[in-house]
Image 1 (cartoon, helix red, strand yellow):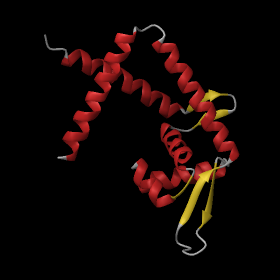
Image 2 (image 1 turned 60 degrees about the horizontal axis):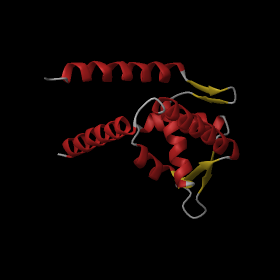
Image 3 (image 1 turned 45 degrees about the horizontal axis):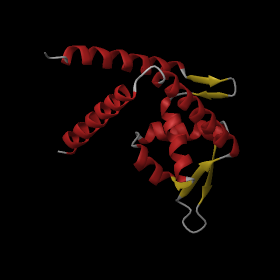
Image 4 (image 1 turned 90 degrees about the vertical axis):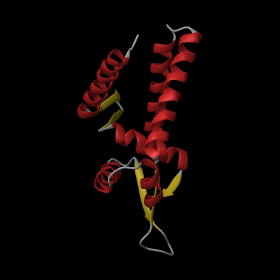
Length: 148
């Protein structure tokens, strides 16, 4: 039995929900609001890297340069990140999370963990393993195919 159409329909539903949330902005709590998932990705990468050059961050998150620059400007304006010039090479800039940015990332991570726990509580260990195996396999296949 071929389940391709059913899987495609479910993926389409998930993508639509993702896009709806992204377009509306993401209000996690009264104190935590993000304009887009791209902001969350950027802040999470900064949390991992601590302080990094804008060029290195752009390579990791793989966004269009214009979108990246807009995200940086918005996050700077909201004081979630800081930007400083390199002392030696003035063309190079470093960015990192401010204390307020770190707090926002912590809120997001807590909500993300709570949400995952809420969904996973109703699943057996075998169902959880099946989901992990499925997602890992999709990731493996897409990475392999897109690298060709």
